[in-house]
Image (tube, rainbow, N blue to C red; front, side, top):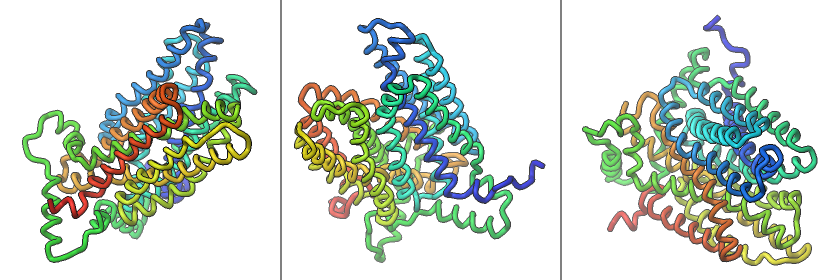
Length: 475
């Protein structure tokens, strides 16, 4: 029986089903995170019984508990994932942690219980993002990672941006039961999909010899991304020498410390291309969280919008993201991450500055604000995939140049652990910094500061993403 072919093997191990399962997993994490944010003050007041003057500090503590757990556990999740034979088991463990966290939030009536729940939520986020991205790369390969990430990030951004508003609306009409009932329903769908998932390398055991050959060929292609992605350099008689020199630059010298041997991705973190890619991920998360934190309050101040109307504004931001994310991802796969990173972050600089044009008023003022948000959504779609594709390419070169150094499964889960860490840090910093800047210097100037961060990202992308351009190499 152990060797019998599982029912539905073909569709359960198909690329579409695996990618959909990862997308639902990431969506569930962000959705449940945002769903409870607007009701935390009410939980602390009504169920815990805290006085009014202690609520804000405890809300901040609960948010910090999630962020701290996620940041600290992400690298550990990477080590765990690269040390186990399959990705599915830790992927399920992450969901169990999220289920436990949601139950504790639903039933908890003391501050310590709520803090433990938020810590479990943070641990789940670390595991789900790390394992999920590694599973994506295992499934689609680096040559298709861009458009896959672009599509998924456009989808999960709905959970990140709309969940807080939806949580507030449902709480107002149906109370705690309505909010958590919606959360448990999404968890149930997520659990069923993760249980049904069969990884491609597991499915290969039951494939025919033709299927095995196909899988092996696919794996070979996956391990050998083309050099044409790198800056569009023209081939000439010196190309083999240049390629040999580049491969040597990824070699790990002998005699590395015990820490590096235990956690080998640390050596790759010396690479400026990888550091720049992680910075872009941080900036992307900061932008997402800043929109989440400031759009509802700005809409209330400008137009007197309630939570439902503010939530509808996010449609203007999300729809372009959904449309342009996959297109930009395909272009990243075709032409490399540099053009998308430079143009995407560069494009966002003037667009974010233009948000200062938002003014109080009626329908025309609302249309202008929606149009500006839609322009921002285009930029967010473009910058969705370059960072993770670039980071994956860099660590692939280290893995190829140092066979066995990164372990049997390579360095990818460790990489995505770090990516999850910086992304979570961005989601934490974004609301705090943008909210403080908005109160201090106003909405328009706050967006100008974020635009400056995008300008830095675009400049670093010119220099490092996809390798140094030719005019810098000759210096």
